[in-house]
Image (tube, rainbow, N blue to C red; front, top):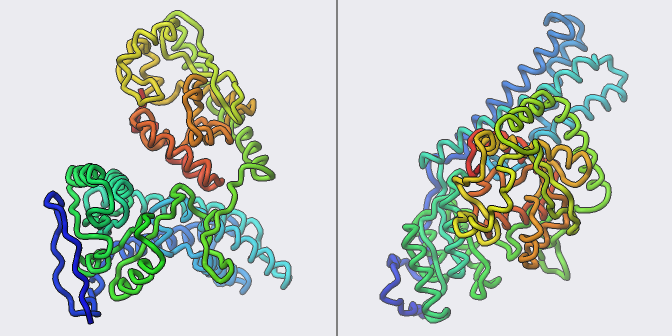
Length: 507
């Protein structure tokens, strides 16, 4: 048996040497004694038990006034509904670790399980002519669903807080091309709540990329405090030696099917998971599926659901939500209008032309937060912009009024856009509505944002708003366009409340 000779490494690369392993055999790394998934899963299950039992017992007491060993149907009803509910949660895979802690999929599965529970109870009652109190079921299931979602959210927030302290983190080795690896490491480092801590990276062998590209990547990794542990061919040995929890592989010409197959076999000797980043990185969820084509498993990309009945349903929900919000917030809107009028000279509302669906212009409404001649002063302040290459932003803009500063910090100046949603120009959730001068410098990627309506809130608002650079802002907007769903909208609106209270990037 011959042993491959590793390629020479440049002197500037910080590479940790690999320990020798017996030829043809990789060292088995035992799984860790404890893992964050076990702790988190116990919390989730405990919360679900509390939510289901509390909602069913409370609904029973409200409907019947007491709990006793009365008719058998009453006892079966009190005990049977929680059993069916938990069976539905398991059937909808609401306890799989990959759905817990991140994204909207966890909440979506909880809602689907609750709807399934209602359907099973209704069908069973009709099929066997059972006398089941409808009031009990219609009270316990909706209340319990809401409680399930709230408790799971609290468990998630606790997990994120602990990850912010460095707990419950998964160690990961990132392998791929230089620029992509640096970008992923930077993203993982900035989003600690995802629970990924990069132990090191594996890069293509020296000589396969221009020296300037490699030098820039090594400098970026050094600034992030992440070592280079080997070449791409060393990935499996590095993962086994370091005992990491996961290996993330990015697209690169050196990574082919044979490489991934060998890497997968090697990782079977460990507890490490294998993550493969597709070339289309912003498309996730139900749009992505593996399907056999001519005997080959290919990644199938469904079209984004931007037309048809779901688009009509989104418009209906948007208008209904905007109308309800305007009615509930009417006293607040009147109070803000009076404050704006008394604080400075000028109209209460600020009207500005923005670009919306398919490039059509519309007049966006906001409470005026600047002096009347703010637009005329913009040119003089252009050199003081703290925004990105496309957007003008200043943390301490001299054009902002006293009341306007408060409105901007709490995002209250955006509330009149509920009228835009009611008129159909905007959605409750969507990409940021751009100015015409911004659209004029858009590339092809940025123009894809215009195939959906702009939103009153969106991923850009809950992830930092004005603190985002242009590339990050565009990436978030495109992620929303590619992966829209009602569950996604609900998650964004829920997180908007926290983003407004924290006022991050609001200036």
